[in-house]
Image 1 (cartoon, helix red, strand yellow):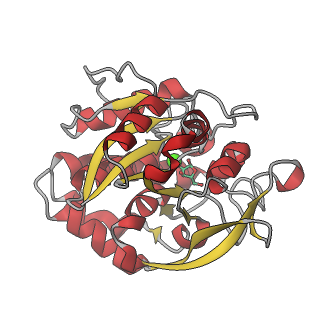
Image 2: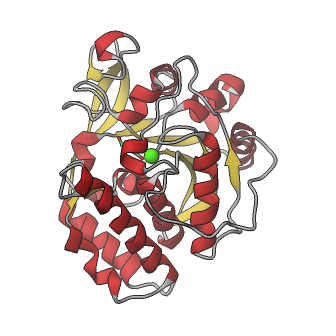
Length: 303
Ligand code: RIB
Ligand code: CA
């Protein structure tokens, strides 16, 4: 099992990643930290609590983090995640609140108590992770790795250069990528290879468990939004990044020096450049293998 802290900006694909993290027996989900990104911090935190409650796992600790990027103004993505961040879903309010310590304090405490074991799976802007490394530089040596859902070597999804999570807080990304903590970049080069069509999760529809029902509800909400954009597929970016340290055979990795742009039209670009930081980059992904994975962990469990 891998001990993972999931740092997310719960939006719709983050919500599926949360269910994956709970359902996957190879993942020991230590806790979830929330950051502003797809929507504001209040909503990302509330969505995280409510998703956990909807699958009967409100016992998992949720820790609020940063409400705005290190330097840039908050740039959100309501167009793709809805005003609340959870599409058009109306989730039952969790009776549980987030914990009363800051996300970075929880991360630091957990890393110190588990030296060399904790993987941070960051699937939102890197503001929390950067803040952790700035506040507690001495723990860098104790972090097993940081998996980043973010970046792209082949064009962006916010601008033609930049993927959303990096674009949202490029200064934070620079801090993380230059930290000398092992960083694995799961960017659009990998995630865009796994385009789900509407019938790709049909196997879940007759399962009728908490996990499968909520995943189908989220998936269908994603499609209602994507239909409005004239797109006939969805991409579970965050679920893919989550499993980069456990389902490694699904990925093709290369090591590249990655340089991040913070200003101008190329803000948020992640490019291979000799003055960049050595990063393990996913350049390929087995889409059919991922669909088998989803069927295995969500279709065969009783959650
Ligand atoms: O570019 C995709 C990423 O941006 C995903 O993490 C999605 O949730 C958004 O945060
Ligand atoms: Ca996300």
